[in-house]
Image (cartoon, rainbow, N blue to C red; front, side):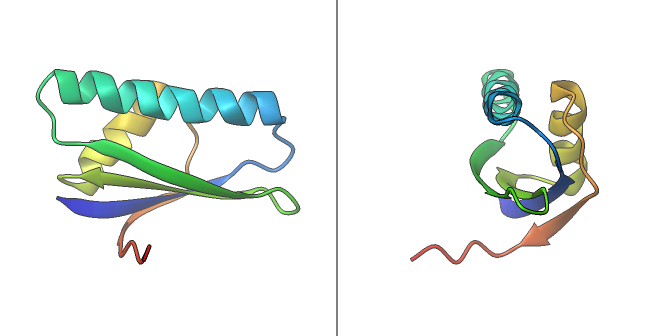
Length: 87
């Protein structure tokens, strides 16, 4: 699997709505996994001052990650392959 970064502009989002979006991403990834897809939500980083949000997923393709976000109803600007450099 490859790590994909989903870039979002969530300027003005409330913390409750941000938490709901994260839960939607997690739940959708879990449902897709239960249906046999190799996909997993990793984590998100949010910069509240400018609304940028970066979400990481393990997946088989950018199209699969796009499908997850579309299904969850989550906005995004682009999806790119990335390297997760967590120590």
